[in-house]
Length: 128
Image (cartoon, rainbow, N blue to C red; front, top):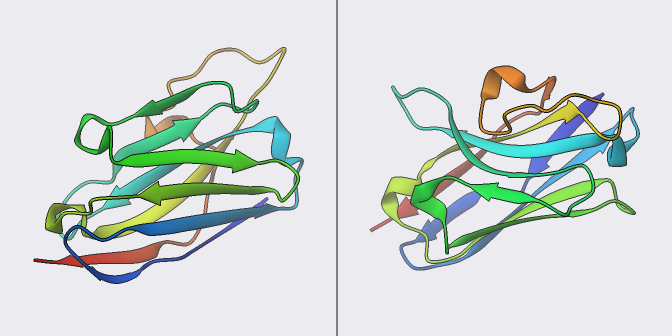
């Protein structure tokens, strides 16, 4: 399974940006998907997650109301729409996946150690 993230860039505070992450080498609808981020000298932290079916989403408190995660199973892609960006959102953003669905046990989508596969990161820089 390979994950390829894209869509990062340099924006100003208050701007919007949409990240994409395409999955290949696996059945996309069999994976729960998540976004994590890592700022310089900080640990990687959870941002948002969506269940394998798309019926459930969860967000980290700092991004609630500003970010929206979604998935398109027909395109094998998960998105992160980021609005009202702040300088503190500056980080490398990573998408990750975990095998999930009927017959699989529950997992904590906010825990990076529960994810099975990681993609390359995409840099998001928000200037003040």
